[in-house]
Image 1 (cartoon, rainbow, N blue to C red):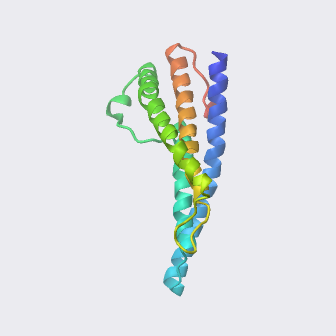
Image 2 (cartoon, rainbow, N blue to C red):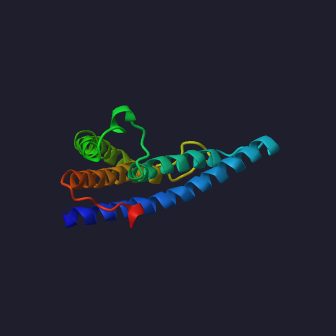
Image 3 (cartoon, rainbow, N blue to C red):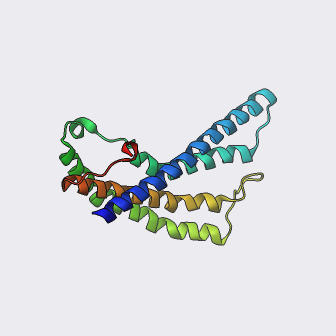
Amino acid sequence: MGLIKTFCRWVDALNTWVGHVVAWATAIVVAVVFIDVIMRYAFNISFVFTQELEWHLFAFIFLMGAGYTLLKDGHVRVDIIYQRCSPKTKAWINLLGVIFFLIPGCYMVIATSLNFVYNAWVVMEGSPDPGGIPYRFILKSFIPAGFVLILLQGLSLGGKSLLTILGKEIETEGER
């Protein structure tokens, strides 16, 4: 049981750190969008690089922040039944969801994206647009990386759920 608790704490700490990095990226994307809007409407100037930077940052935020969102229980779900369940029943729902949905889904995305990312790195893929960002291959690398973080956080959720089912609670990040 100690190994499960250690793993869960390590994964939670990793995704918390990544969540803080993503928070800074969110502040950066707000600044980039603000500058782009000012440049476009006040000076009638627009740059492909700036527009691509906006969606590159958004993709980074979305992909890398998903594990943190799972950690904070922020993913959308239908809570009509779940919210009325006991902690043990919630733990069973979470454990089964991790085993039958999250793990296979993450595996599928990771496995199918690796060749896609590899090919992007081989050709050092960049923007097809003149003046665009020349490092699209790096952005594509966040696809499997983000899903690895979701997978790890899902395993942590599964471990915590198993501990709850067995009556061996683990203190969460906020309780420490």
